[in-house]
Amino acid sequence: VNTLAYTLLSLLTRQPYTGYDLTRIMEVFWRAKHSQVYPLLAKLESDGYVVSQWVEQSGKPNKKVYTITEKGLSKLKQWLQKPPAPPVIRDEFLVKVIALRYFDKESAISLVTNRMETYLQKAAAREAELNLMREEHGSRIESMDHPFFGRYVFFMRALRLEAEEAAWCKWVLDLIRSDK
Amino acid sequence: VNTLAYTLLSLLTRQPYTGYDLTRIMEVFWRAKHSQVYPLLAKLESDGYVVSQWVEQSGKPNKKVYTITEKGLSKLKQWLQKPPAPPVIRDEFLVKVIALRYFDKESAISLVTNRMETYLQKAAAREAELNLMREEHGSRIESMDHPFFGRYVFFMRALRLEAEEAAWCKWVLDLIRSDK
DNA sequence: CAATGCATGTAATGAGTTACATGATTCC
DNA sequence: GGAATCATGTAACTCATTACATGCATTG
Image (cartoon, each protein chain N blue to C red):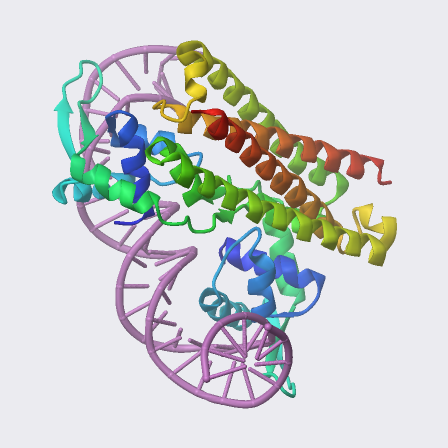
């Protein structure tokens, strides 16, 4: 049972999900491909941490919905109390920034502009989602025992960091542009 | 030749380094263990992208200093022009935040406080390093062709994001504390 | 006298990506 | 007519971590 497994269990405490859903939702804080998620869910089921149920759908492929068990929840709670490992960051953009002097001005500007636009978009989407959450749940969501509290504070973090990233990009662009 | 290899080549454009140095320097934007770095450097050498030289030391183990070759530099420049892959983030802390409602108030506070302190420390260290760079290189460092320009803007980014992370932690702590 | 830093390397194992495989529906 | 979304799975491969191995110097 590794961190990915605990990530899946964490999300399943909120509500039952399919492997497909989980893969999509996790993207922002723990990227994993479906080819890793499906076998792991099967393993978690054979260990008794989750149970699954096929749901028939018309027009779409049928789906397998996973629900966390008592055993899974207690396993998760145990893990939650341990101090988290330091984050792993692997960002090709930053590697290229380190070597920025090997870019000509034009391609440096396009590199950073693309990054900025990506993060402006992300921030806008995040803000929209936060507004939606506030509408749906009101200020109760700012209370620790609300089921979406974790998700709410996480989204706030994402928004702040994405906005900051975009602002930094703008600063770099101004530096490059003012450099003759 | 994978991204880790290009990361090593990028750093070696600045100056010659040992595998030990490279492992340490990379930590902030591309984490890799020495067990991955040493064999890869050896491979890069056999491919002619870097050359190495043993440097004798007294009181410390001897070290193997790697220098990038012309071939390595042109290989790197080629890669730099390709658009960067989206960043990979794997952060156990965020997984635990998602499941924050399974924490009691006390341990939630300690989880977030630890994070905040870590990032405040990082930000302080980053600021010190930035001041050092400014002292050493002056405002020339804000020019794109300065060898430390990339490192400079990268450190500015790190500082801004670390400070923002700490500020977010404080916001979460206030939320938790005001929640009875 | 124990831990940490310097310094390099290999072997075994675990984690993660890419590619293969299938198939209906909806949107442009 | 082509791409994207929904939906699950396996096989082959690459990448990354942990553990093993060595050894001296400094710091607390």
